[in-house]
Length: 394
Ligand SMILES: Nc1ncnc2c1ncn2[C@@H]1O[C@H](COP(=O)(O)OP(=O)(O)OP(=O)(O)O)[C@@H](O)[C@H]1O
Image (cartoon, rainbow, N blue to C red; front, side, top):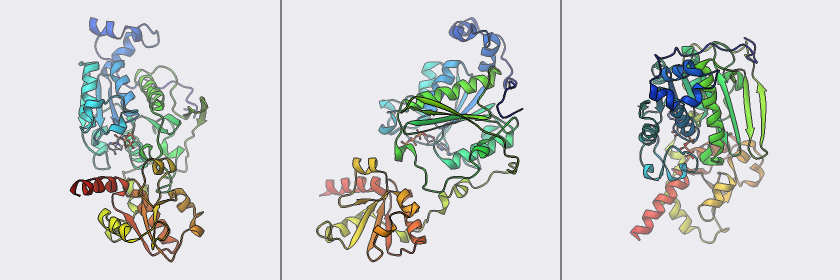
């Protein structure tokens, strides 16, 4: 198999018995495509596909898998639906806000096609759960939003010899590919090393154009359908990159790097991606009440005996910020470009959305010799929550 995958892959799934008349009618627009036909539709009916994440990518992926007649769909997620998810996570609706993403997604799939078997795995996919879970499925689709999960999915799929479809979205850009260690390159050939902790932002931090998830999610299902039926040329060995701001597609070739050692076991992916390197010490933290007290005693803004620094992105700062704080984004701290502007002789209080980026910023500044620092436990989310309840008490 060469990297451009010119040779078609064998169909991944054996066909189910004949379609019922109702199924033949329902899927008739697939069946009349010569390359798919009744045989391809029967393969889809027999397919068991596991989707990681019922979020931005998972939403269109799940809906199109069910609509395509994939017989068994597993969903892994442990999150609840938030109002800010509805801008792109189209499997959920207003009535789902506050409830589990799995319950909401399963309900939507049941309404779309009650014949689909939906298996809900309400858990955080990690090294202790991935192999047993993947073993029950023919194909995995990774709609997660973090590097630890992506490397985990890659390695677990490689260990089990299974293919998977990967996609990612951020702001205006999306990427999609297929990885299958048995027949071509893997995610580790594309990204041999995890990005430094804090160097990349999630959609919750950096934003994403909602409908981009539909574009990339649909492409992911097209790849899944081709793998299941053995039709066409998949993206194995290629990555498609979509830039919605300029309406352009690009294609990258990915080659297997023979110098990368084969996967033999799962590891601690949080550690591998540097997430666990964030200092966990509560000595480095300051709570909301303590910060309020400090702000009340510090007098006029500008006359401060400490600096309050928001390490989030400009868009997040503009949306909501703690009064009197100054924006210095995490990437500028990590790159070292702002160090000359940051006083060493005053206390610094760092904050972000939930406390992860500020902890990374604190660790980075500490490695640069800063000693007088705290970061806000729970970030601006905790600030909003606690100051709101203080207002009520008042
Ligand atoms: N290891 C994992 N196990 C289970 N679910 C996961 C894992 N990693 C990511 N997910 C899920 O994948 C989904 C990713 O989707 P997306 O980034 O659109 O959602 P989000 O986290 O709700 O968004 P936002 O960042 O705006 O809050 C989330 O629902 C998340 O819970």
